Image (cartoon, rainbow, N blue to C red):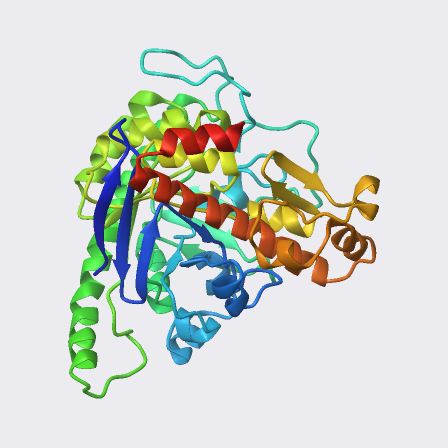
Length: 429
């Protein structure tokens, strides 16, 4: 069972540096966790992720691994670690986000976070001025107009994005699938409402998430009995099958509540009182208010357990999340923007497809110590993108992931040294 130790704290009482110990190694926090959706980080090998990116852990996607290759293949392989040749710690999400992205958000051009400063944050006592229901972008369009997921009180009915077949996720099946995948840290099944959903629906989604959380804990406890038996046999060197796996995953409970202070605090108190090993902070708020929402939640959660901020990876958001009490983070943004030609630098981003970079022989970021910046120039990377060479995505993904992984590592050092405020100010200068 993973353990968490706090090593140093910020003066604000929220931000901290710590260590999460898992069956496959330790994670020094704060830490950014790259997303290996289908048991791979796009365009990178596990060795690149370990040696070039220096990531401590990866996060895989339950819904996508359930569809392909399927849980039976993962069981036969001996679990996620053996299947993808990753020996470090692993996370899996619960599939709950797909209930949103393939359901309420499908074809509407919205994500789990509202655009920066799109609407005022709603604190306790205020009322929403948005129209009831979920936000819809009238200018968005999709080739598919029918949602791929439908939520009800018992679970979610999905249509496969691969072949259109119908599948059913409940809190119990989400836990079943995640135990079959065999990650070190797994999440409970939740409902992530649209970021601009009115308060009435956010309350419905939050209450549903709490009800599902209880069912997830119950199911997980049933597995713990079996897992502990196999773990004991494994340590004694006794014969055992490849499944169940010889370790017990940690179960994290997800806090929801949207942009509303009273709902977020209520959810944090309820989830925090359940028998979880750690916690996830769900999206569905204005991205410009990361620090406020994370602070609300972390003030209510137990201090002695780790907190994971789901779906956050932009450098500024990372620092704000760290400052306000989040320990680990995941996001597809670093690799997604890399594949589209964008790279993080100290002062923001650059687009390598812009003409100016075709004859720019500087590293992506002269201050960066990653293998891409040590060996290659902006001009070369710009050429690779223009020539549509696959290496472009690989080299830029290495840089972007290293940038955010290293940023979290430097923030950790600054917390321990007592220089976080100076570090943050210098980074933002």
